[in-house]
Length: 110
Image (cartoon, rainbow, N blue to C red; front, side):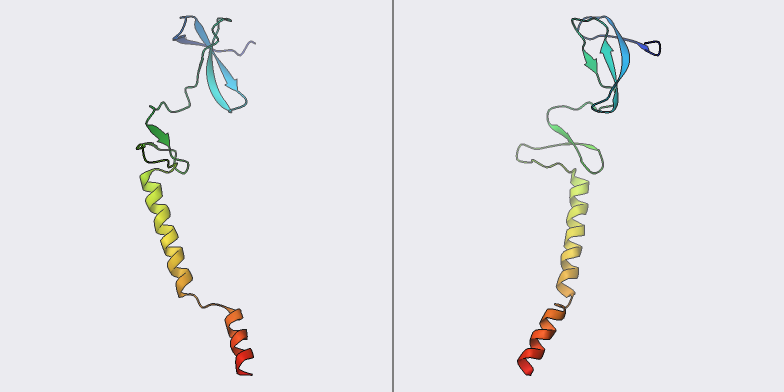
């Protein structure tokens, strides 16, 4: 492999050199330890997060979650989603029922 790039970052587990590779399954760049018994992997493109953080599915922002929260949307995206749903609900209420109501009225009056 002539295009292998050796990184200057040592392996955090064993101290060996790491080389750049491409993880085909996840489609991201990865650094792999060159020692065959270690093979530790570092994914620099993934955001580093703690155990109480989650990544928003819409905007990709990291946000802190509570114990009672199991959300996948950050508070900003969640608030925008509620606004969109409330607007859609208001529009549905103001709309006439459609042709089915008119045809029933015609049958009853005939």
